[in-house]
Length: 145
Length: 223
Figure 1 (cartoon, rainbow over the protein chains, first blue to last red):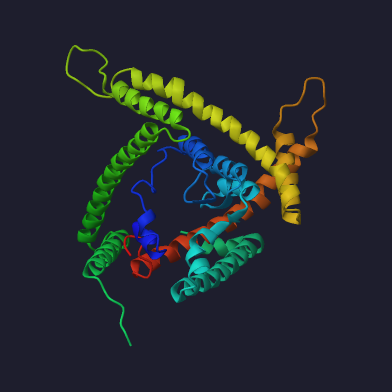
Figure 2: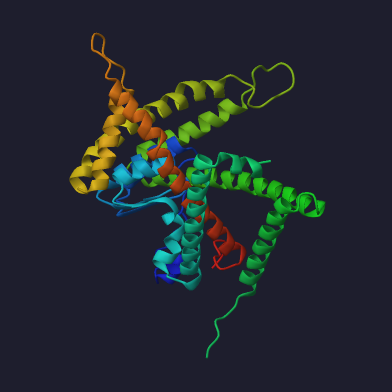
């Protein structure tokens, strides 16, 4: 955090407590940050991480406070909740593509293209597997241990 | 051309992180070939657990410090900080109190911290979960007003269908089986397919991110 403040020419505004642990469990985190968003006049709300559905409470608190909310998680149930509430929600692997969104560095863009390539291969394998399992199940049994 | 300045400390951190990551990964792949990598992997994971436990302590210290400062400076919402501090001290005392003062001392053996979990944490967790259901239902309706699209409409119709099919049938009214059947199909076919698609994308994203960290292209541990 200190280096980020420095990069933005705001090193004098850095305080040791800007990064903080709000709580240690999902429910208490939801309760703590809900109050924090309104008490400390938060204008931007970025919720990224292994959140549970309690993240919906935080996004709702951000909406009430008029803060722009960007939310993304690897939890599928929480993604549905955040899709409904957050102004900007990251779906699926979007969470892991934030580097490419922000910096457009070659490594990030290349890894996104590689992911897309592998995804098409896997989709093809799934479709072929489904067809084989439906029309020629004996063929599949020959390969299973 | 001016070359970027390379700091020795950053190179050292990157080298350690890449080496530890590679050795841990090899420990999974060379299970039967090289017991050294397996032993190293287990050791690194044990060290990681100890460091994570230390990080939790630092986090608790940070939490108490922030709330103490908030209370001392009487900033907005300071009254909640009093509850946080009292709760932290109370939970610590309850955990340290023994079940009885006879015999050897055993922390976490007393009934008090269990009482806190059962009567405070479980109850408030349940209240938050109930609030969550209400917030989500409200958000579904608000979504249609804010972002009028086919996706939003599908989202809302599915949510309503789930609520209707899972609600208990009122006494005296006939049960409408079509809602339950439609919900069963939706939750077992398109929902599972969509969730698997998302999980597949997430797994690929995790692999790509892990590889970038292992190859030192991403350095979340330093500048």
